[in-house]
Length: 209
Image 1 (cartoon, rainbow, N blue to C red):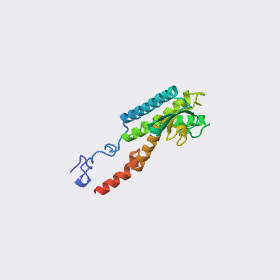
Image 2 (image 1 turned 135 degrees about the vertical axis):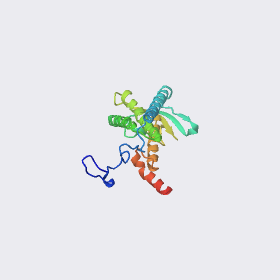
Image 3 (image 1 turned 90 degrees about the vertical axis):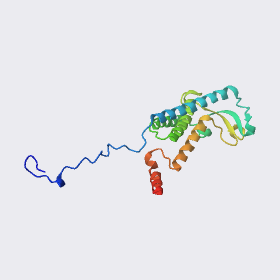
Image 4 (image 1 turned 30 degrees about the vertical axis):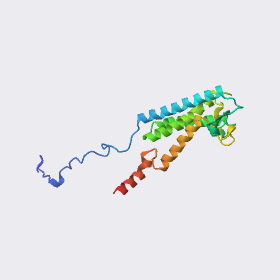
């Protein structure tokens, strides 16, 4: 092929044809952030907080701290207490520290919820966020004062007054369920990020081959 200047351009030196879209043009198979899952996590958290605060209100309105109520054949006792420590009455006397830590955890989880890409993680994050926020409401707005409030606990398993197991509440239950779910997801290869799931996908592809 002769060019305008007279030079000959062989087929071997012809410009390469378009090889197709580059790496930036390809569609990644990695799941992206899903606003619907973020909303689901926040709704689960809001429900957990609402249920927690409602049951605490009922407990304070109807339970005598000195007379626990036996239900489910003694499997559960409703024993009203006020806890200045962490979940399950741990670390009493350090209320302001737990308030600070819980506040940081809630902010972090709200930020993390924006990156959720898998439905089960929306459930897990929502439960943990709801549990942390439920008790945080008590820390900020209950007696004896702002950021020093005592958490209302009223569920005692097997024996009253936490004799067999520390007294807890709905927020503690949501928090623990969320943490257990997170551990199970991680142990079964269903990590939070796509990168944490890559070894599992490669293993499945190798087995299929």
